[in-house]
Image 1: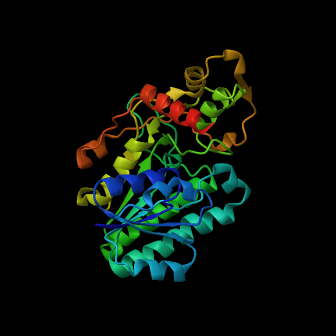
Image 2: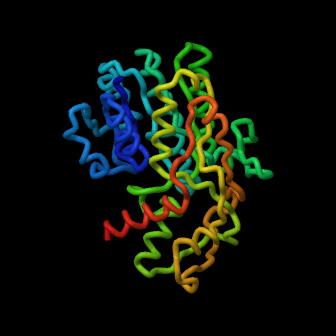
Length: 312
């Protein structure tokens, strides 16, 4: 198949590119490098099925029109503003990228009848209650402009499924981590903690540290993303993916850092947007896609540590 990955030079996007190439598909990448880097996909650029990297923006309709002339079969739409605090400080930029940008991509998908896989986030949910975790039917809560923009994007994508019959799916991966994830700013907690532990620096935990996260290794996430794009069974659906177990931030810090004296609690930067408990119910992904995570938390943390050590 011919696949476009918007945001394909980003952390998760670059792993989706790798997975698509491995499965035999032709791949194009669109990225403005606001969050991604060309280094993330450099090793794929000479691959015979890697058809092009376009330095461009989803807000640029002309660039999108030229790119979609390639007549893709599927568009994996991962390009987005991704930081919660940035969305609180500057909601307009997040809205333009995550809502208007998504609309622009959707219009091209509609014009060429290209399946749309919309990368949403577990941050749209309210907290998990009970042991079963958060399913696709659990309550949502737009606790930040980032979450609100993602929910708006989801609704636009599903509206195109119902109004135009456009094949599309909304996917909500939980807290994804692994190689190529940034350890700066609001990079994932695993990458930040691992980087600081390797360098003997203090690990700062926002608030009490009793908030929990469901941590999904990036290669498992990429398998899920690609499977959703290649299966008709999830068209018109919202589908979660996660490890299915949660861990407190305090416990995570203790697993990553061998020196307890380096673990510090600091004032939360956005407590109003914190989700106290994130635990994923992925049974729908298993039922419709046959997908299950394959990498345990312990194995994933070791892979992350080895990769980060190699970067120092």
